[in-house]
Image (cartoon, rainbow, N blue to C red; front, top):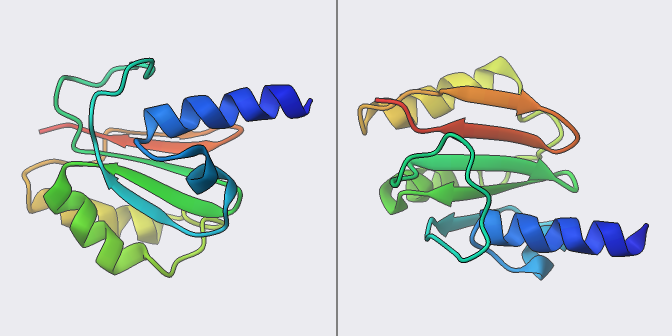
Length: 119
């Protein structure tokens, strides 16, 4: 099971432009999105405005620098435990509205994931 978990953490690190240790630790992380080799592509276009995942009780954000910087100011001390709450989505929508985007999808699966890239 540890081997599967390690591979999952490696893939999440690639998908969210951070290190495996960032995925494993207990701190929130905010990175600018880059097209890393091996990343999974879902419905995202060439430009990723914002992707967020809740893993190990914390938040990992990646996306457009301006958006991620604002998210870092707003959410750096928030827990991932209840991040899928509607009030947080409203705050994210306000941040995205400044870039003329809105929340596109939220997937409350094993790892909670939000992808926002809609004009």
